Image 1: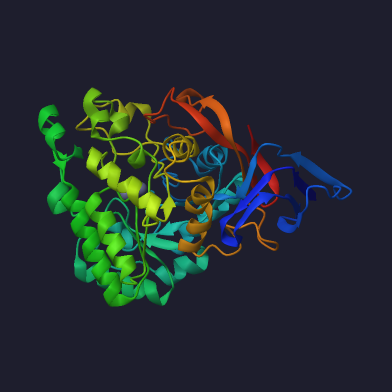
Image 2: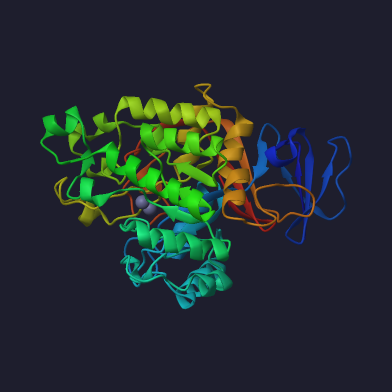
Length: 427
Ligand SMILES: [Zn+2]
Ligand SMILES: [Zn+2]
């Protein structure tokens, strides 16, 4: 029942902790921080974390677990296995299952499936509107009571400002953040990649940055008007991050997340027509990537979220125009964050942990998580910042293998994942 994580370097941004400490866990909770010269309590199992970083469990605010309805792509169990292998102790599945998670019964079902799997925690995101068709508000209060932590119509963003205003007022009253996939489809519909020089050259229909910018600005104004907490999903454009920066300076309650692929790749990756470079929002051009990195650095971006979107190989095998949007991401996120952000000096380790754990817990109000302070739930991500490894789709725990990062080399990985005091993954 007792687990001592010994000899590690403990980083807990919420309490400004950044030094060597032993972490004592009992009955699923953090019960003490011990100095490293103190002897281990008797009957404690010892995990030797020499040379490793001990961090609060990583929380992914944005995944697609496909269950119920599309279990050939992913199940809650297989998605949770991929999550813990990638260092995530908690994941928040979007509601675009089949049927849509727009009611308490489906929310409860998802949580129950996760409990049975016994790997990661699942905190579902409920739909904003019934069937996510933008016409009628879903029962947010009932979903919240069943365990939903936010609302979103991800992928089918609420097109109508009047409906979004009502949704924000309603969600505000239940203290639920409103997550929007910002895309004005009147500008982007039919597009398959970022609109720019390259889309012309490749003969593919473009999705302009403008479509994201406009919707982000609309929602920021609505958040100001309603007082709701508005969270931008997978922000990808210069205009949207600039809007968030201004809004934060004005004191508007807005937060945003970025995906690893949007801080790593640009539209140039589409040149080979690999359908694993097709996602929404699309990979943008260099100037947008630079704006994203700047926003990660200066705190405008609050969280890293994967938008893990499994698709079966047969579906991704279609021509570029017809293939579905989305890539898997749970098992490559930490490696990409180390390669592109930490080792390149964009951010330090404490900021990485803030982006992956402390801030996500705050954004979705996950109590007693996102920190390792005494009394909190013992969700822990143990990191080896120097481990060299290669990601291979064939080895993925996900049912789907649609990652563009197959055979990429990384320095830095999740070494072990502990959920509720139990070691659920060890490299
Ligand atoms: Zn989306
Ligand atoms: Zn998504």
